[in-house]
Image 1 (spheres, rainbow, N blue to C red):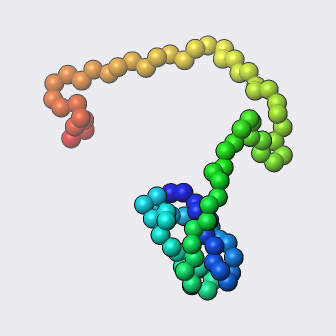
Image 2: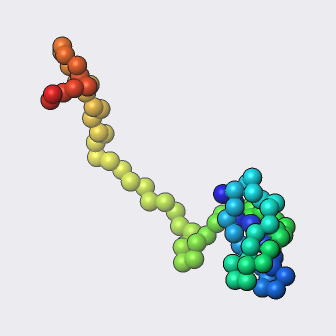
Image 3: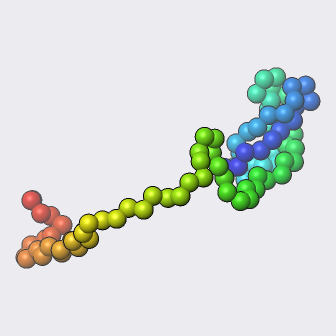
Length: 87
């Protein structure tokens, strides 16, 4: 569900989560409950790398295993119903 910007004539702008099907229908202002219309807001487009606050740009740590994990062996069920084990 996208977040849309709406403008109330008395209170100003506010945001509201709405389904795409209800994008153009007017909304009631949360503070004064008058009808507010949707205003155009450009989509948020991220370019380049996104850095979080306090996060450094560092190289990833290389992890080496001493031995490879053994593949799991398939178990065989003889007779009966394998999906009803223990019944």
